[in-house]
View 1 (cartoon, rainbow, N blue to C red):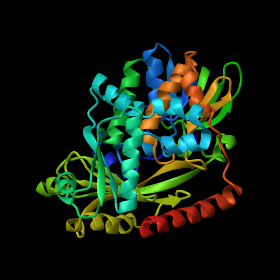
View 2 (view 1 turned 90 degrees about the horizontal axis):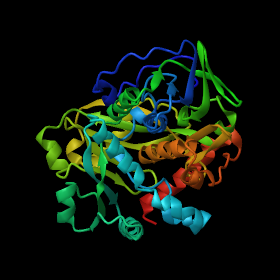
View 3 (view 1 turned 120 degrees about the vertical axis):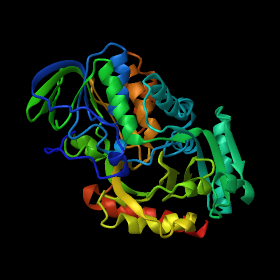
Length: 430
């Protein structure tokens, strides 16, 4: 991406339990490629792997390490659709724009599972996800979500509002109702990223780590410059997301980096199964939501909250522990072994921003906290567009992009004020 100095992986549970990964030296000198991708996260790796499989010579340049950003730090949950669901998209942009997006909203999860199966990626992938409601109004929203997704052919959903039945899935009194999605799931996000990087290399792709991009030179054959080298390519893909910095000011002003916090408890042993008998992942449907799941070694991974402007809070544990204790009082005093934050990019519309900076420079950014499945989808769509089939890519490209009002000075306080309002509505159940 663009920073001048490399950084190690955040000291997270994921980094501590990651599979060994080969050393990938920085770019030195000039190289040629069919496609140069900036950023070795899910977007870049997904696009690169699709293109490499199709015979393209792919080079990825990464400012730090594979999966260093959100791709290696997130909650690890497979959640369908987008940060705004398809009914809101239709209301805002019309049926013609919503229809192709609806037809693709379950595809990202399929891509993840295809990659894991094809390349035998060991990332603790487990099936099953839950959306949870804390009050009757939120429960009604889950019923509406079920009806909406079923109208688009997604049938593996079960709405449950009996306390005894809820406890067979999640052993808590915290929720009014849950919606179970058998096609949801969860996994070790950094190990998925490392597995996808290895798959790219198996297909002839090359990844240069510690290779911060300083400039993208436009032209018939664009040139991507780093401190010690350059890549000349037919196409460039900018896949930096929350770590775009000042590399492309046009993209910078359209998004705001935000941080979310995650903790990992000590291994829970038998208690883990008592808390989540289903071993599904869970997220509630509040505006500022909580999300959690069990790791492969039976830790509780619990996340939530948003820090606007992506400041690193000093005491992550103190932010998350009260939320975890509300859901599972048994964990009120549990030892927390890891706490970390990871940045995602928020857009004003809460929809991804996808497009081209020139005829041969593509970009995707701003998943707004809903990026695991979308990044895998958009990687496929960018690869299709580069191969001359741009219809599905254009469905996202046609969505409007908005700069944050007030520029940098006001985007954080204005967004935070809006979040406080929606959080209050959640708490009051209105």
